[in-house]
Image (spheres, rainbow, N blue to C red):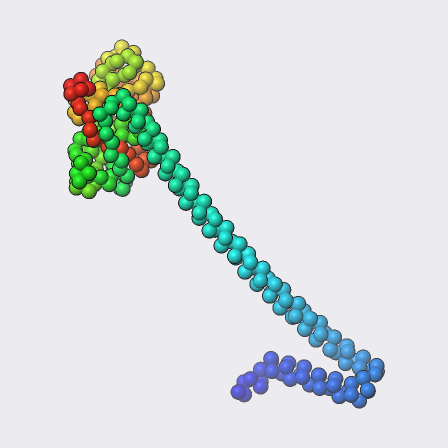
Length: 282
């Protein structure tokens, strides 16, 4: 307790109380009339009133500010809830839009090939160390998905099922050098095959190779599957020609193909599960 009585705060408080008591006695002695003493007391206590008023005003402002902040916080919460609802609606819209794009082109493909059937799948994993955009989907043999099935996005070929497991499958894309499919140009009917290429894969492109050096294939030509070999049917669009180049090691020419969709960005796809290869010219 001794340190309390010795503190500066206690001394100031005692001094203020002493001044108040002196003021009370002087006012009583003078009958509350104006005098030199009361003028002196007024002069002494005016700063004290000023400080008290300022403190009172400050408390009022703090109270009003606190009240204002509470209302502001309430408004923020309401707006955040509205924003959350709008974001959910936007997410639903984007999903529907993507699904619409996915099926719209696929229906066009089905109109040309009535026996085609599709199973929708979601991309559940990607190998970040794989430069050829290999990815994993959430459908497997339990969903009647088998090795070699064509994987499409709308009407565009994006790869094949490399390995199907009971509940998931690994998809090898068209930019993988291990991928190969017979293909042709829909304008010139020139026939060859499309495969991946390590250098072109960096740009997300693949290769329509072993073309004649006098090829008539030009920029913008559309390349589709030919259905001659393997398990991929005829008529699925692979992509568009962006360049025509000569091979460095032989006299043949190749075309650089830009896939019909950005394989790196897709999160859904369709697996072609029912078609008759023989009816496509094999």
